[in-house]
Length: 130
Image 1 (cartoon, rainbow, N blue to C red):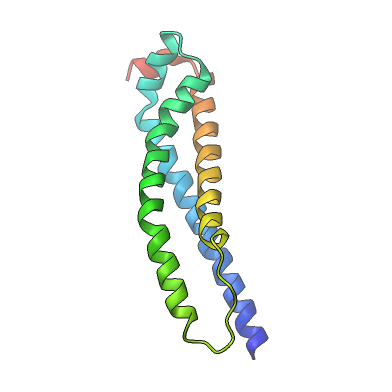
Image 2 (image 1 turned 135 degrees about the horizontal axis):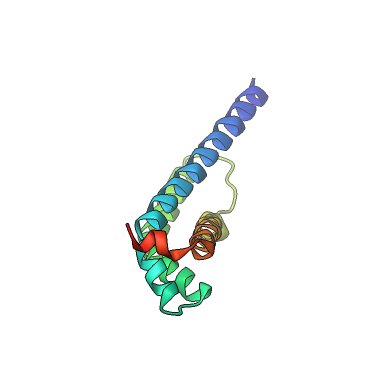
């Protein structure tokens, strides 16, 4: 019975992660489409691809940093207090808190980079006429 519960937990965790990644893709697609005109203006004025990616990534990294500073102590405290209720306890290290944040950082960088490269390779004239 515990094996079935473990399998069901794994399946639902995978579904939740997939939904989260699709949500991030949708959000950053919306964000890049909203900033498409600004990116095209920067491209026409001679900005490099790396500058456009940095322009799009910087505010998102600041948001991630702010939420991480708030969430890390809270999650560490909640996990340690929840863990103390059990007789057999595993050690909780900081990588249990840093790994999800680092993985979200990598996903954000990849998604924004792909969408920014896509906009950068498009013709900027139609974007400027909008």
